[in-house]
Image 1 (spheres, rainbow, N blue to C red):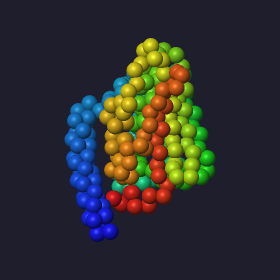
Image 2 (image 1 turned 90 degrees about the vertical axis):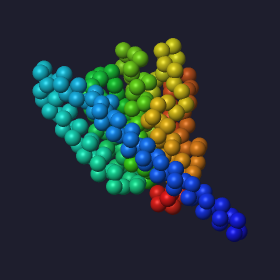
Image 3 (image 1 turned 120 degrees about the vertical axis):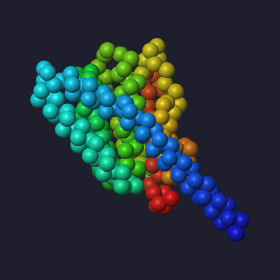
Length: 222
């Protein structure tokens, strides 16, 4: 029993050290991205393009961008949010992306009432959806639909984001880019598990599933 307690304490200290390092790395990443942040850069480009021909649309997008950034700042003080809150904030991002891509991008979000009240780390879904848009839309001129489905199982809140995938023009990889790898790392530091983010290719669809343990009450305080 004593050995187990010592080993558990050692593991907790190791994970705390990892969390501190991730925090430093994330801040360095944020500082680098401030020079030319991908999402903000694209949004401002779209606003600039709309300003001349569709000033009303440009003003609307400015408002959406402001609300999105304001919400992101507020979430920095929260360790967890309800899925309902997360999806509400995600919708601001999706509205801007739909304004950028017009009829080419549509989304379908499905979540039952139980799932909407479950908790997850804030800002977890945006990089997953951004990855889906990148794979689903950037390599085609066709219209696509990205789906997000949330359900409550016995142990998990399970959220799956799915986008069309053409194997001839795209090559999805496990943990693609900083976005998905950072999500996977955050989940490990919170829950000490490496099996909570799963990517898969099935027929002509690429999916990312994130699983949030429902009964780990200590995870957000670690």
